[in-house]
Structure formats: C-alpha cells, structure tokens
Image (cartoon, rainbow over all chains, first blue to last red; front, side):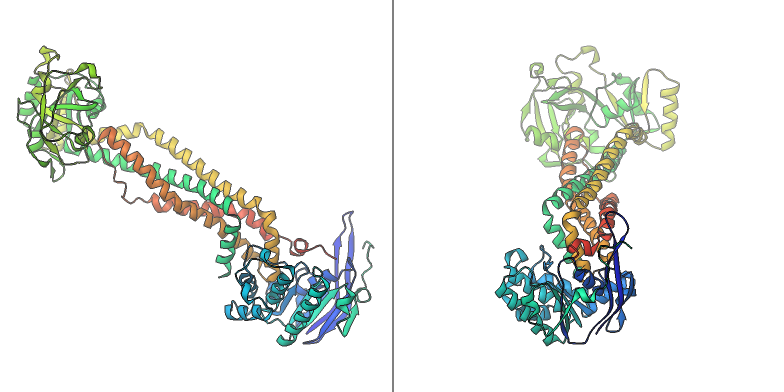
Length: 225
Length: 401
C-alpha cells in the first residue's frame, strides 16, 4: 500500500542554508495494516506524513501509494491522489469552523473519487456517534466530538491509507482511548491502512506494530547541508 | 455543490464586510445606471416633447430662451411681439398653424399661459395625440374669464372644475401681487406628460388685458408656436427672419436647438459619469481590500481545503467567484438604488418641467453596468485570489514537528 524509498526533505533555515528534516531510506505499510510511529516533537514525523500525503513536495526519493509515486507527481496530481487515496486526521482536527459537521464531511468527499454522497456522509457520521449533530458547527461540539468529525471526514472517501498525526493529542485520556479505538475500528471496517504518529506512550502501546521514527529518520538534524 | 458552498459559507462568515462592500457596489451601480438612463431619457423626452411645433417665433434674442419659454414654459420671455407679427406669420403660406402665447402671470408658482383655444382643438401635442379634458368640462372660449388647468398643475393646486382663482403677477409667486380678475376652471387636461401639464391655460386676451399689465402691450404676444407645411419652409423663414431681419427671432428647428442644449451641458453628464466611474473603482477596490484583509483569517480554511484535495486553481477560482458574487449582489441591490433614484429624479424633472421620463424603459446600461461591475469585482478579487493560490498548506496547517 505504502512504499517509501529514500525520501528526503530539507528546509531553508532562518539563518540561511538548508537543514535536512527527513531522510527515510525505506518504509513500507501493507494494505489494511495499522502501524504507529513514535516520535518526539521536532523529530520530523509530521513532515514525513506531509510528504506521504503530498502536502509537501519531496526533495528526492519515492513515496508510492497503491503503486503511484506521490513524491514525483506535479502538485495538481498530488492533490488529486491525496483526495482519492488518502484520509488525513490532524492533531488539531483542522475542521472548517464556518461549516456544519455534515458540510465538513461533504467537502472532504467532494474532492474524492466518488464525489458528494450525502447518504454515506450521514451514515459515517452516525457511525462515529454524531448523527444528531449534523447541522452543528464545530464550535458547538466538544473536543472529542470534533475529533470524531475529523475521523469521519478522513474516512468518508473510503481511503486506502489513513494518516493520523497525533490524533489524540488534544484529548483527555478516556476520550483519547475511545477516539483511537474508533479510528482503528473504522479503518478496519473500511479496509484502510493506518499510519499513526504520536509521542504518547499510552497511544503507542495499543499498537502491535510500533516503530521509532528517530531510528527510521536518518536526517542529520541541525546540520546545514 | 463544492464551489457554491465554499462561496456561500465564506460570504456568511464575513457577512458584515460582504454587506458593506456590496452596499458600496450597489451605490456605484445605482448611480451609474441612473446617470446614464436619466441622461438618455431626459434628452429623448425633451426632444420628443418639442416635436409638436417646428419653430418658435419671438422677440430678437436667444433661440434657446425662446424654445424654453415657448415650449417648456421655463425662463422668461425675451420680449414681446406685436399682434401684427403674429398675424403676419399666421398668414404666411409656409405656416400650417401658428399659436400665440402670452406669459407673465402665475397661480401660486404655476405658470399661467394665455393662448387661443385652437391649441387644444387643432394641435397634436405628440404624433396622433390631441389634448383631451378629463372629467368633463370645456376648453375656455376666447375673451372669457375661463381657464383650463394642466393635469399636474391641477393636482398640485387642488383645482377642480368650477373652482375660481385670482392670478398673481409675474412668473414667480408673490402673494402681494394678486390680480383682481377672477378666472373659473372650466376644464382639466388629461395628462400629456409634456410641459403643458404644469401650466394653467387662459385665453390670451386674459393675459394681455390683465389689470396692472402695460395697456400699451394689450395686444402683444410673448411668442408664436409654429407648425410648418414643409421642412424646407423653416430654412426659408430662418433666412427671412433671422438673417435678413433684425426685429424677431425664429427658433428653428426646435429639436436641434434642444439637442444643442444637451450638447452644451454634456460636460455635466461627463462629470457625473466620472464621479460614478470613480465610485465604481472605489467599490471594486473595496472588494479587493475587503477580501485581501480577511485573507489571514481565511488562510487556515484554504489550507484545510487544499489538504482535503482542493487544487490551487480551485481555491483561486473560489476567491474570484466570491468577489464576483459580492459584485453581483451589489449590482442586484443597485437596481433598488437605481429605481429609487430615477423615480426621485423623474419626479423632480416632472415638477420642474412637466416632462415625464419613462423610468421603466429598458436601456443597454441596465445590463451592461451590472455585468461590468461584477467583472470589475472579479478582477479585484484576483489579487487576494492570487494570495490564496499561494497559501502554503503545510506551514499554515500546523507547526512542523
């Protein structure tokens, strides 16, 4: 499902020069597999997810999703591939505050392969326990409910791969556990692979397949190129 | 669904700035449309109003003053003509109809014009349209103390059949200058949408012999309204009266003189149009500023949309379309301002001149202006749209870990 080879990314440092943030020689994720990556803040794990999702353009290497190399696609095609194959759950949920719960999910769907499917959006929101909140705005929801909207939006397009970046970072322990269980369950139901990054041991402990991102990432942090 | 939803939600989220911006566009659009339509309608109405007569004969002076005084009942008469002059022109073989008028009195600000009954019985005030009375009554008879009120004057003065009044001396109302003669209203004209509507008509002898008027002018006329048998006759009379004579002036052709008037005051149109253009530019600029200033607040939403799979060009299009929508909303509201303005302007013109503008008439500017305004706003939206286009997704969404 996901095959990363020699993926690299560097940024221009404020003081000048380039600083390498990500250098991953090899990383694979099978279809339907659920894997967690441990990484401290600043380890480059969000950048790694952004590269896989095509939100950032890679400097080099490959990030194949279902056989299509995201890293070497032009931007418009990366956008298309992301919308068609990926679901992304952000730490801060990144819900559109001016849109209702249902509209947030519908908008996510509108860029996907199947287009807007109101019935499916309603169904998946029901699946995450928000059937009675369709017309609410994110600000009218609890943090846990907002997280559920983010999960529903990420999964509404039936993605092949779900990327979750500290998805429970803003939740308390009980909500975090529930949210994580929900994400994993819905991914399983949809046959989607899940790649989750977190620095929370409680979250990481629930994954059989856990990998330390600091070992995976060979970038020489803080060293100007 | 996506683009309309994004535009709708964005407009809702920035409802106040949307309303203010759309308001300024409405004002610009309304002003532009009003300036154009009033200009065109007024010119058409004034020129068509003067089609009843081909020429106006009066004392030596300004042709324009003669036309304004004789046809539009504005301005003062440049002087008097002797009755013999009227008789001379009436009997001229080139003249089909000659109607003398005498002015110099008013009824509470509405001009009293003395004339002969033939004006109402023989003359068409517009092609195929003759004066008619409303609610019965009759046209005054010569040498009587009777009056026929124009529809607008009757409405404003509250005149009814059988009412009596004393004229006031002069063209401007001064209650101290009341004449002793009493006139009785014997007829009220049906609306003609011409300056005749704002006049109180009495027999010409009534004006000529009014107490307090110069007895030596008891047979004089202020002007003679002329219908010619042929167009070429006008040039012949023009040569005879204006070029070879030095006592009288023939204002001919009336339509050309009015067109010339509009040509002379066209600078005013241009100033108004310039003001309207500037307002339009400011309005388009306000769309640009309004959206541009809200870009920092929108950037996160735009980045989220990008992360969900929206392409850059779609984001660009959404912002441009939003600007165009603000322009379209403003342009639509501009019709409200337009109708309010033109109704007001038309009423003022009617009250001042008796000429009625056709405010419901179509005009090319009524669709060109809203379209151009919307396009101008879309163009203004291109600047913030470009900023939106360049929104860095990763940096905007979250700090990179």
